[in-house]
Length: 493
Image (cartoon, rainbow, N blue to C red; front, side, top):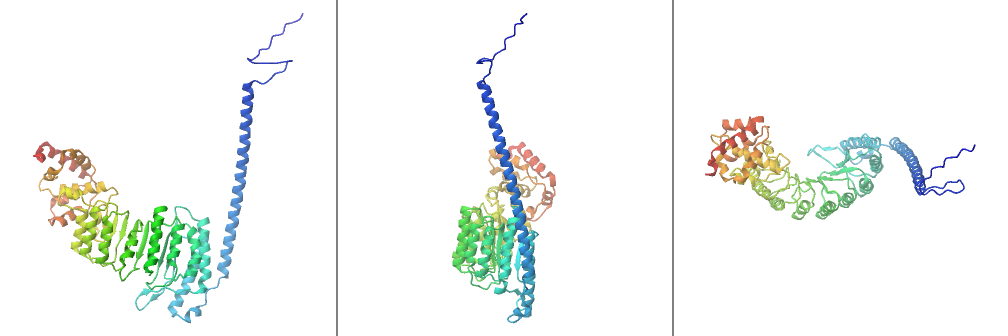
């Protein structure tokens, strides 16, 4: 008996002939996608393998480079011969020869630390020889026998940057009391242009020495974008050379990462020319140090005019000059229109009590609440006593302003904690703001009461001691007294 066979189920669109089967469009697409995915996996695997091999090759190359570098360093360290002592004694005193022996040993140690990556963030190539007569360090003359040291130092600096440096530990490089003629600068230039160095500084004895230092600094400033600080101490250059360096900083600040610090200390002991001073101030460096340059009334006028224009300068150091009370008044007055200067250091000048009061009034005018609000709330004044540093100590100018306002409100009253008589000049719309700010008053003790008494020529009493000793109750006391005064609307009568 013949058993009927079941018919096979077919899918829609199935087209079979002679018992064969053909792929449907859906199956074909899936197969194509799987093949493409497989091909991508193959490519990714090949790329990963290539990257692994390349990384291994790079690692091997780094190891070889390090071996070669250490080998070269060791070869140099053992092969370089110290310059014979009698070489220096022919022309110089015994103390000079001693200092030169020490200089060579120190130089070798610096090179070793750069090669091994053990340098501690700052490199100072220094020659120490004190002139017994005037108790000043002298600058060592260059000698061609020192060139192997300079060349190896440049190589070590590049090596440190390539293999040991990181963004968090940039290097500061300074050259103290050692002559750097063109031959040395030509060796150092390529290394400093590419190294991870944030500061380059030169310190000399104040005697002019011919060199192309201005061109050297111009190249480094323009090409090394990691360098943000430049310093000169006792370095004497022509006005044209200073102008060249200032212009390089100005161009750099416009086009690239700005120069944060520009130090020019003891470089113009006879006074700085008007042209150079304006070039330095308008270099657009964020911080300028003009300490110990013999500046006085002529320079204070130029500086005050510059500060009054509210330039982007954030820090200005004028330590150890010859400014007096009249100069202090000019500088203080310029702060009334300046909102960008964060720090002004006038330590070591001839500023007496009148000059101090001029600066105090500029940043803390206690004649009225409106005058206080119009004071400078951004600049901290250094060099006129520690107590004045308590003013403008917050990052936000608004916080500094309200701290002063509440100090006046509390310290000027006779009976109540808050002098409500002063509030009569405050619009009613600002009262909520006043209340909100009262709740923000700082808990810490400050020296503001003493400054207030100095400015008002008043005597200290128990009320002033209470204000300083309130601690964490200061904000609550301010809020309480303000609300209590609003119960009777006497402030608007």
